[in-house]
Image (cartoon, rainbow, N blue to C red; front, side, top):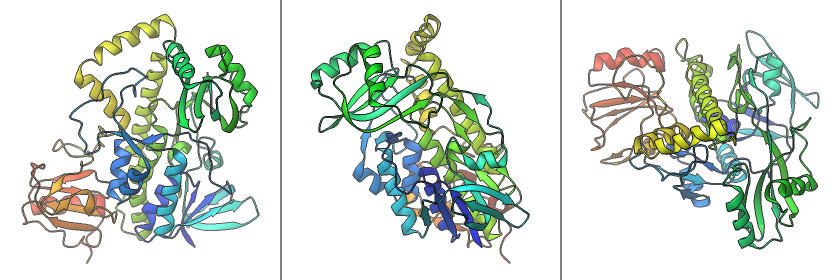
Length: 475
């Protein structure tokens, strides 16, 4: 029997599968598409996702193919300077197209032993107290202990589970594509500068070799948004919005997206769970979607692996929904707010002007950007030290860096006292005795996802907290 089937081979599914393999979980990824998509929906990684890649030893690959940016405008397109003094060693956005991210995550997944089956479409599932049966389009049936739906906003897994997906339907639609333009670059830049004074859903960014990434409002919401727009539809909407179609031709790919905002009522039904866009959809403002999914996977992976291994304490797997659903809810709210601020109506425009004034204050600007890049998240672990529940930023140690110690996906006790112990949990938690000038607490216990589970210097207190996250001590 397979331990875990992951339905969906996008960034969320690949990240989850790789996390599971770090703990020797037998995992199979089912991906409907026979070939990787060329559609570039996401353009980069935010700080928390960059940290995630660093924690697993993958960041060098991403930095080699991406480009760091410190640009304003990530909140509702309101252009302000990039905030200073951010609580991360990676205070930038890494520009990297989604197909490249997919390729890098696929390579990592294969390296750690993930079985990726392309051209395999899940069409039905059933579950009992022992496992899940997945039926594929070719008539094949697979049996697993757990199944996770990472199969996008139109999730088959969510539909088969009967999980509600309440929220707001698409009200406006936007066309997106990569294509060649015959208009000279200076004309494109001039038109774009003028149009974007009022229409922030329009843009034409050069990709090199005469190709541009073009975004333009659609005339209406399509009956079937899975059907891509035609080049003629693009031309028509460019003429309506910009007064010219720039002579667009030779599209590499064309797509459309809406502004639907929905959140799954539940992230778990028995042995089946949801992650990424299968659990939440929202407008792409701030570029949060892919990042939110990767971070879902990072939270879920070690917990599901613990359940498979048999040492998970009661409630650990359910903490996935308890922690990640509120995060998604907050992202939905900030994209709703950004959508309103981008409206051309007088009321929202007045609020936009006021928000722009408020963002002149460094603390306001930083607060809003940190919401989008997800470094301000604090899970509710109960009362305690201000670090409790927050992810630990990378810090320099006398013998290296903190994140270099986390590549294996285990818990970690960073002990500056040298007097503590993880005896009984050493099969799940690493004990590192080292010191950092950047850490002003005696010791911290980190979960495999880097969130602080305990702070202090008392061994008895530590041993009373270890079982909450790492189960009973080994005999």
